[in-house]
Amino acid sequence: MAGPGEYVSDVTEGITRVEDLPKAKIKQRSRKRKKQPCPYCGYMAYRDKVFIRKLHDLGDLANNRPIELHVAYSQHCCSKCKKYFNADLSDLADPGCHYTRRVVHLAVRLVVEDGLPYRPASWHLWRDHRVFVPWATIQNWVEATGKKS
Image (cartoon, rainbow, N blue to C red):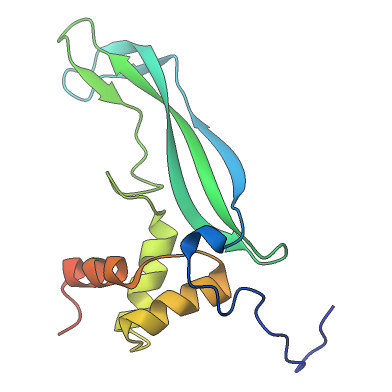
């Protein structure tokens, strides 16, 4: 184990292909519910199907590996208004996003508050938090917040 102040090189330095990075550690999470109130009419709707959503989270620094969350969530069908809806995952990630909110907030903070350019911010996320985010994705997140001019 490295002592304080001792330089330890990053074992992934020099890797140019995403496929060559260490494999992710899988963590299972569940948002499956048998019944859930319908957001449209309030009627208690039964579960219809179960799906898995994969999200990249801040990595495991002890093992030098990224973390991938596999969140099982339920889809419900309201028998009263005949509409389908999913269990709420908005506390974990935005709809359609492949990264958790923690990753998005950290990346935006690195660029906006710390003033890092996009490419070094991407490297910083990998080096210090073991999550690979392409720099163009970080640019999209920052531009969506409207904070960098």
